[in-house]
Amino acid sequence: MNTITVIGASLAGLHAALALRSEGYDGRLVMIGEEHHRPYDRPPLSKEFLTGALTAERLSLADAEEIAELDADWLLGTRAEGLDPPSRTVTLTDGRRLSTDGVVLATGAVPRTLPGEPLAGVHTLRTLDDAAALREELSRGQVRVVVIGAGFIGAEVASSCATLGHSVTVVEAAAQPLLPQLGARMAAFCADLHTDHGVTLLTGTGVRALHPDGRRSARGDGAGGEQQRVGWVELADGRSLPADVVVVGIGVRPATDWLEGSGIPLDDGVVCDAGGVTPVPGVVAVGDVARAAGHRAEHWTSAMEAPTVAARNLLAGTTVETYTALPYFWSDQYGIRLQLAGSRAGADTVRLVEGSPEDRSFLAVYERDDGTPTAVLAANRPRPFMRARRELARAGMAAV
Image 1 (cartoon, rainbow, N blue to C red):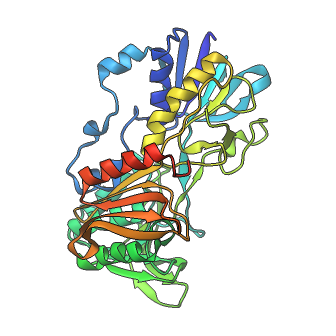
Image 2: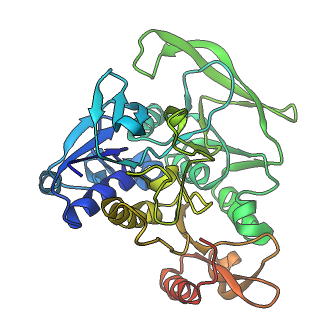
Image 3: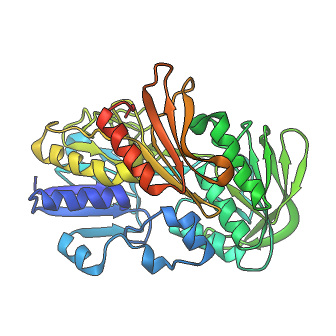
């Protein structure tokens, strides 16, 4: 291969590029990124960056020397809008067509949004620019914040907003936050974290609509002009919540729209095998956009580790290695670090190994009826968690 193009310049794309160089690839390397920023770390956006504890400069995933050693052509602030595998060309939004021998798909995911007219004061949180816009609004004085969705991102945003002294309400359609991931007992623990810190948690109801309040603000998308500001949130059960700022955290979808009609198989992501290899020769997928062996993992660790395997397979022209690892996720909420490894099934039971939810510090294991462990969860117990995680990984009991 004389040219390899990495489409997506975030964590997975960067590590794919680093792996290609590490594996001895010395041809042309092109990095395409929709954002204007070089690769940066996303997890702090909802936490330390939002509260002002971290600057944008400290989020960088690679320093100037590492970027120089990569020896890549960076095409930032542009987006791929078409891929034609037979002719080995990538079409960009500015009309350019790039010839390439290999392609790494690392376009990640985009936040899901609510229907209706766009309103000022309504935010999603996925990119550095998203976080900067939200932080700017939060810096203008105490505001009423409504967070829609009590998943990990929503909970972290709520925690950050509460830390900054804002009035925060979290709306969750499920009966408890993180119920599918953690089960009822540990979901109740997460609910208590919100109420412990003065955050109002409303569960069991969705959002019917967002409504303006008659004010107008400058558009936040750089398009110029003004738009109406959000004023209140109408819930599905008829209640209304006043809101100066709304953060929508209702999940993401893989960024694959631009691949429609390309011949790349799509099904809730780019369909590929456990090595990131797609059925189309010379094309691999990594990170949040990859549906590898039937699973799509939205986890920082897999976005960092799986690209090494995909890069080897791309250079080999076939699957010579597969990536299997225990799913792992962490979240910082209200001064508590939650860590989860493995895959909990709905019928699994949870057993406390040490500590207790009431003390806000514990280690718990999820088990099948026969006692087989499937996942481990910890709150502020990092060392015991790492031991339990290693044991679970060695046992190979969690689904990948």
